[in-house]
Image (cartoon, rainbow, N blue to C red; front, side, top):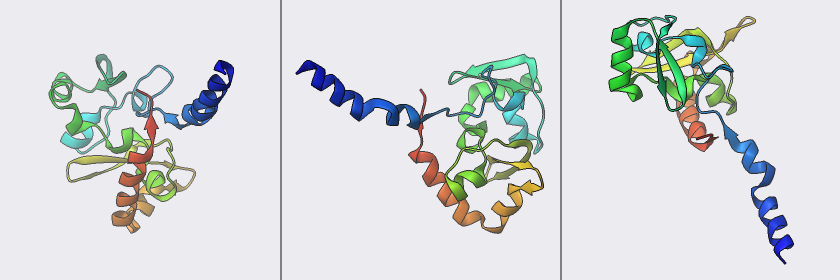
Length: 152
């Protein structure tokens, strides 16, 4: 009977649960968010800037880098204000296809103080597609993001 319970539990929780767990943040193998780009620079300066390895901060198990000490302190005080939407994954892909897709850190848009990042390679700049149908894609991306099960 115990063996049967274990099998039933494995069937209910097995591979499907493990497959649903996805990383919350777009990080590299070393756990550095978006190849070291400064999340505060998007909001404060309206541009993409690489952060410095000497100006790093761990948040939610992820290493964020900053271009200057002021940005690091701003993030430390209010990380939620500066974290890009959808963990830094492509907003268009999340809205259009419900997929997490890598981004070009230099292709972004700030909407109401929130940063949205986009894939831009191989003659495919998804920011252009996003701009053509922003309201619908934004709503779909918000909905799709809440359905993802993320690793703690």
